[in-house]
Amino acid sequence: MKHLWLHFTGHFKKRRLFFTENFKAIAEDNLRTLFWAVWALVILLVFFLGITPVIIDSWTITVYHIAFLPVTFLLLGIIAFVYTRKTHKTGIIYALCFIFQAIIYCFVILLDTAGAKDVPASFTPVIYIAMPAIFTLPFYVSYGLLGFFEILYFLAILTFKSPEVGQYDIFNSLVGIGCSFAIHYLIMSLRLRDYETQMKYKTMSMKDSLSSIYNKQASEAAARQYLTACNPSVVCSFLVLDLDDFKKVNDTKGHIAGDRILGCVGKILLNLFRHTDIVGRFGGDEFLILVKGTASPVLIEKKCQAIQEALQQISRMEIDMQVSCSLGVVLVQKQPVDYDTLFRTADRALYEAKRAGKAQYCIQNYKN
Image (cartoon, rainbow, N blue to C red; front, top):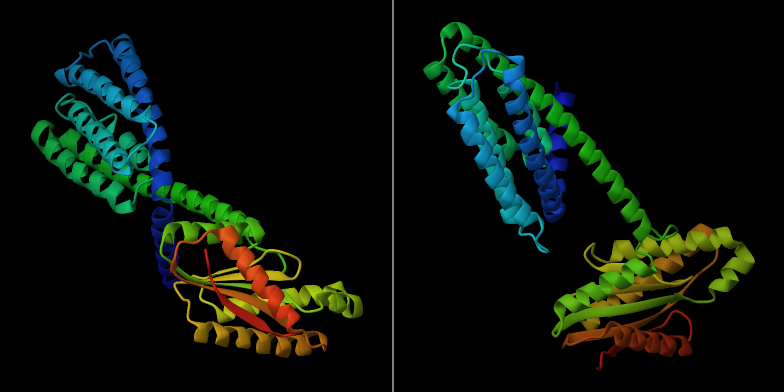
């Protein structure tokens, strides 16, 4: 029982993360589904209104059937208008999904109760199964709406139907809700699995295979995005790191040892900097770090020293050879910043550090 509880709590945690991270994308997907769903509804409605009198001799059209058709066409026009716009507001999309489901529930309940007083319900259990599965909505939205209309359905059965027929309708509606839970859970599990797979491959495409940090494209894109968002008053520290005499490591210890050192550098940087900072490898033995919201010379100097000490210690342990690095650092204090200029400035600072010898760092202030 405990394992089952943990499974379900884990499932709903994944759902919350899924909706939080993909709110707009899910809304766009729901809009496409809504557009084709309302078209399918119109076609099915026209089809069954035409074929039912042929199959069932005693069937007669009711006012609820007549009202359902123009309301559906009106809904189709509204959704088509929103769908063809270039930009879509997520709030409007979710509202339309809600309205669409509410209209379906209302008319189906009327058709199965007031419109069919002496016969068992035909549509309500099917709609209960279909509606929560069609759209990607939070659980409380889908089943809060369904629960509300189940209460109305129960009251409509008591009002319009005999107890003999009504009891079967209530039972069938509960069966429909049960099946709906199972199908909705299965479909949502598949969606979550696909999402996790997409995120896995997306992360793999952004990460460097040796050092487990951002690759060149991802680190540069993240840095540019941060600077653009903060301009014209950027506060950050930008570090460029280059291993000293790394070719000597490959030549004397082999490329496998060199790869191990690159992996160690990635681990060191991930441990010394926050998860919100940008850490990436943009060349063979070259790394960059963008420290967000911080331009303290004292703090950055301590970070440079910590990198040097950790690298020298771990390299002796891993390959029995001391490896050091040089760092060029640029501090930005509430200034407008261009990424290319920032990188060139840090690269010049790195050159100055290398001119001073091994295991050195050079810290400069950014100038436009």
